Image (cartoon, rainbow over all chains, first blue to last red; front, side, top):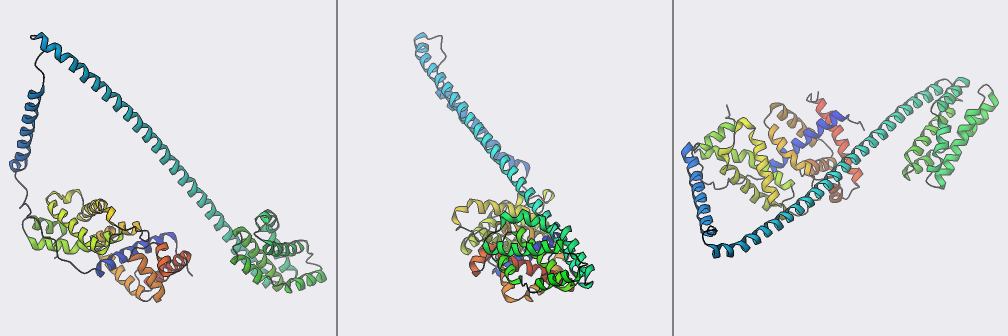
Length: 268
Length: 183
């Protein structure tokens, strides 16, 4: 399957979305327009636009003034008994106003705390998202690096197959060392999912160690090793391990090692 | 030459009902698809489309082309109507909200000649896809479904749906290149 790069993928996504929306629109049967309310013809003149607002404002102000006039107490002072009767009412109103003020301050404090908590939550969410993104970017970079290394490995195996004998084996030994297969294998030991994968891993590691120690100039040793590799068919077991969901690092290691060993078969 | 949207609006405000009908016919479909992708049932989407256009026409005299195009203005009204009726929609887990938002973006670009050419070529390429793949493409981009929704509807693993969509995109790119519309 050919893969698209990010820019082309995004462009194709946008194009498909436009096509999809157009297709969806074309599938709907046309329905009649709603019965319209009469629209104003052109824009209204300045007085016509503002007159109703001004009239409403005058009406409202008049109403408020009449209400205040009808409910406000008579002035205190000239009539002592009446003034004394009003004083307790005034204190009650003051107490109520103070209680309202205290309640408002309490609500304000609650809202401030809620806003602060929400701001903290949002900041933490943003930080988590950033950390997750950085993690994904690191993983992606690691995958790309391994892909590049695998391509290089395939080239070296191909080269080894083209130059059989001592030179080919030397190429494969160099490839295995450059890709740190033995040291990587040691680091992957605690990520082996089950016994079958562990056995497969052990076998591959043994052959890899033998390859590393092999003297390419010793023809007998080379032939014996090559015969043993040829008798080994680990392909189906590797496929099974991949299907069984082996750790990606382990899978990568198994494939690379198998590539090297396939090179031994062809180069010897 | 076809009058612009702004001219249709001006004519409508001056009492030309045919201009208002034209405005409705060219935009009602987008609004309806947007509402369907928000999760409203077909009948509700029809009712809400009518409600959107009643609001549009009542406040058309407030539209000012100098402050922005008509489609985003229409989209804002449609969003408000949809939000007020949110409780009426069934749970739209299988629908992708991004696909609803994509409707008005498509509406804004619908009349551009380069878009028309690409869409026409893409239509041909999609018809050449294998039927199973074409169906998944339609469910995703025409119906606005999520990959999980498609997986459930088609009884497939979600990873398979994603893989087929990727394969379809790659095949469509090759097809568009062969038609000379993908630079």
